[in-house]
Image (cartoon, rainbow, N blue to C red; front, side, top):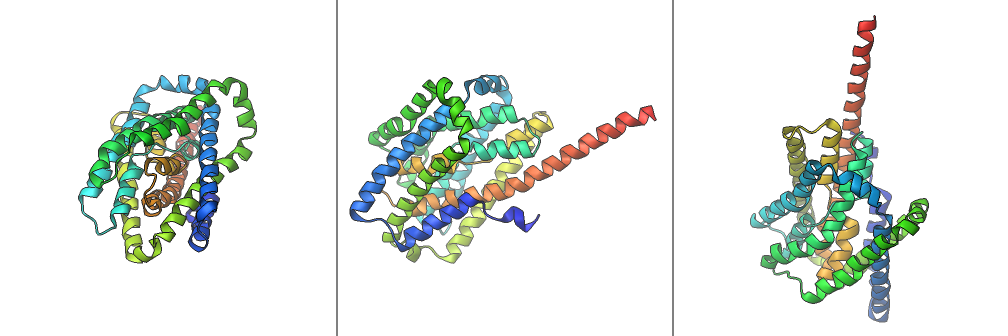
Length: 334
């Protein structure tokens, strides 16, 4: 493992910058009201863009591999939530908001970009990864609010009908509208994906800034100690390790190919910061989101670092297998 692989990505550094700015200069008064409206509009546009970028052809092609998708969905929306419930039951010496944040991250959908990117690096089934990651994000719009209402009710966190209405109007409706116009603007989205990616990340940074601004005003840095951070890191590393081991084991027991195993491991072990932070902003409106979204923000970086190493190992394994096959093909001729 090299130090370069452990270096935070630019987006994570930008998130850290947003937290720093919010810690020094949180938005208050009129500035907070205006910025909240701007961020809400940006999130709606963000999910419109997600809908417009999602290729229907890729979804239809990938849906035929139902066993692979079933295993990924089971990991994302069954294994992860069960582990979250188990962590909550341990009674760890962490603030209730952090415990709720850990549980919340286990209820989210998988990532899109990083799942596909790591599948490609690991020489996996990229077409299936595109479908699986996209489908996970779409299902998450429906399943995450339901899971939050069921699983987190006992944590003192519940969602209201107003929250569900906000989910529909701010997330689902823009996504559907994006899908409706996808045949006409999908090509434009792909050609300008880099520029649109900046908007994607910018909207998330806005939510993070507002969330931590509220948390700073509420005294987050007075309640969060280094011991708590160390304990949180240990829990999140353990959570990811269990999911990675389970998805790898399940892939091999079910007889999937190496390429499909890569896809299952990479798509089934991720949690989406891009969907999770905006959704938390709606589901938990009025609550202190600083501590609640902190586990998701840290888990985001952990999954990138760890999966980058695993993807490289899968790639090395694929190269070794290819070299062995080439050598075996040459021997008879010799």
